[in-house]
Length: 394
Image (tube, rainbow, N blue to C red; front, side, top):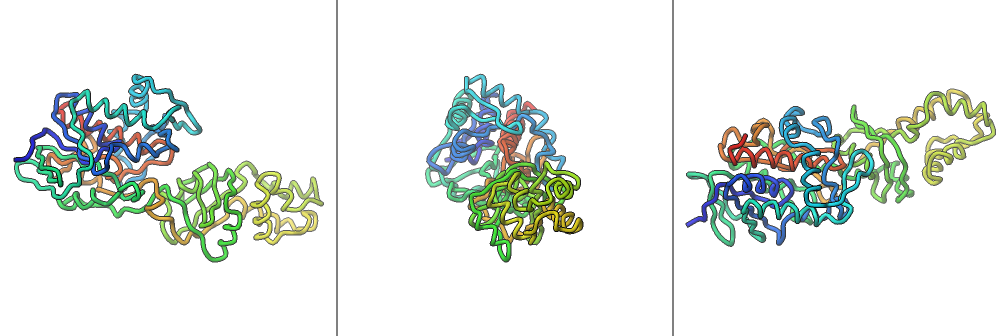
């Protein structure tokens, strides 16, 4: 005989714990099943161990989805300020880094412990090391694991996406969604380093060099550091751009975002005996400046170069096109683009339209945030939306 609950949450990550705590504290009997040996494993490694738990500016524009409007409702009803208030109520010290990113002063463990205590306040059962063997639906949902059998009228898919498989990530959420007739938007790695080949392999020689740039893919542009690696391109601006990149597309990099107009022509008139290499070294790391000057083939003094040659160099440096050969895949991806289609879900409750009582939240859903705390905010907001719906308060 299966143990009966009001709701079963699959996955003790950020979204799952938030959902369980919310429903539990409103009187529902909730079970969380986690296949790892402890809850919140991905939270623990986030932000270099300090958990970039939200972004103070989080809004719908910071997310990718086949339906850009889907995230609006949940994000509006549970904001970054709401989560920050919860963090502060536990006395967790925090600080703001660049671009509204909020981190713990101490450790990511504090956020996991907070969520576990929140669940305890609601009488939530959290069972770890439970591998799901079967999920069925007949008079509610029944989940069979290697340790037991559990049933509930509500089932929440909060098992994330396939990014970071070494942490145990899989595509289980998608298999389960398809089992209940829900469509899945083809998942692909996001917030992931890009690889270079061909003539661009030359840039691997400056592995470890970084510089502030603007990286663009199509209409999406990100002004942060780019890092050259032994495999290609990384760093915050590249990771951001990677979420928008598809194979065969170019990534354009503005190496000199602070330089405007005909700056190189102006330098030619001011210091005609300067070289492009020496001028670039004023704004960029030496090794990067040297390789850009070499690739441009402009080794002469500026005074000996034609205005048209210098204009061409200006244009290249403002929009240097790279054609990545691929990405480093789910193994190095922080999150996943794609997932359970938002067309299948209520944006207010996260409940599946075709399968009443079935919910999908967090990274399992086709909503992907930028780098910088946005994905955690989606986890909190979508978890609250589903938790409140299960409790009947939506």
